[in-house]
Length: 182
Image (cartoon, rainbow, N blue to C red; front, top):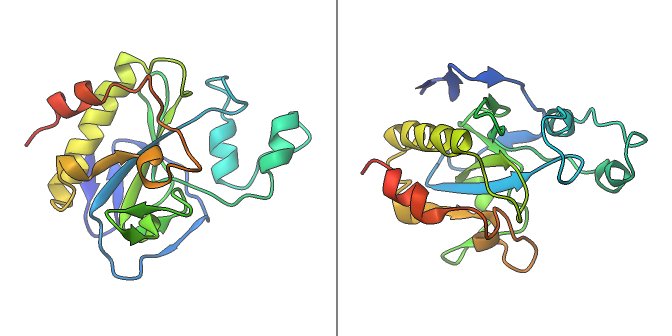
């Protein structure tokens, strides 16, 4: 995998462009936010996350989908259970993943962060393949964005603690931090 700095797209991963993004106000990338998602909740490998991030989710297909159909969200990356990585938004653009958020007193984390979704839930362990892919991706992103230090890698729950719980208690922060290259 290789990030092309002029386009913000990674080579060696699947591309599935989302319209749910816009220009970063200052071009800064200094935070990495880890999330989890599964659609329908608790089901994996459905392809519905990709449809959701592309505004193509059929709200009649599942009762839960009707509750989220009007949302326009995205992340920069999704890592599926088998470790496959899909990129939805250029790293140069602002993906809409964090919502109302704050990191170290600074609001609107979408402005300066990259979002990585792990296919999963708060209450199920993530796969070894996901950790391997996440570590490789985080290392590649940090090579290009050195402001993303280990201390600036956080969960959605860290930047929106009243609203969000992901990546959840099953996410192994110690494993990630021990594996990251310094």
